[in-house]
Length: 170
Ligand SMILES: [Fe+2]
Ligand SMILES: [Fe+2]
Image 1 (cartoon, rainbow, N blue to C red):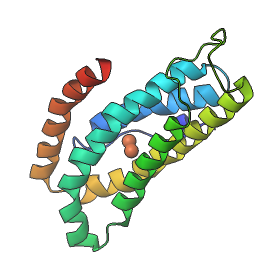
Image 2 (cartoon, rainbow, N blue to C red):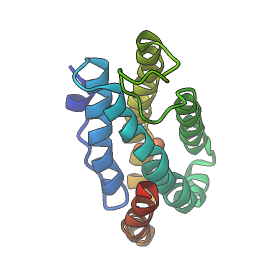
Image 3 (cartoon, rainbow, N blue to C red):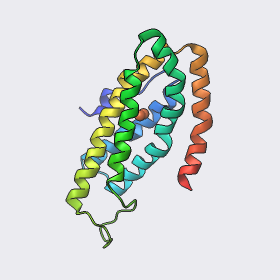
Image 4 (cartoon, rainbow, N blue to C red):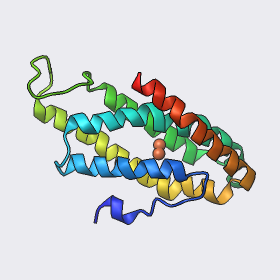
């Protein structure tokens, strides 16, 4: 069974926009790992995640949720783990230098095998990351964040997604 079928991607207004983006992340990661999509297409989505999805989590979800996590659970571990993984995925992405990879491109310095290996590491890291958010951090947000803050967060996400997307496409 694929991860896609084992998750519901359903939450409250606080997390739904991010969960909707996870569906494509899981689809493309699994697609890359089973050879149905190529590295270039998958890496485009990785870059979208790095420049749009992660900042929505790092800059809005985490700061809004942090005080409530501390208040109710008195530990910050779930947030620390997730933001640490964002840093890991960015590092893994930087290991693949060229943004546009085509097989005919003579300037490509890494071999196809090496590329497949490195991109595969990113796909696997992303899959377990999404799993951890869907069943861990986001469940905590949906359970512990008060209604007003849920609304505040959903407005911030809606407002900032198009701004981040615009900057990403520049
Ligand atoms: Fe994340
Ligand atoms: Fe996420």
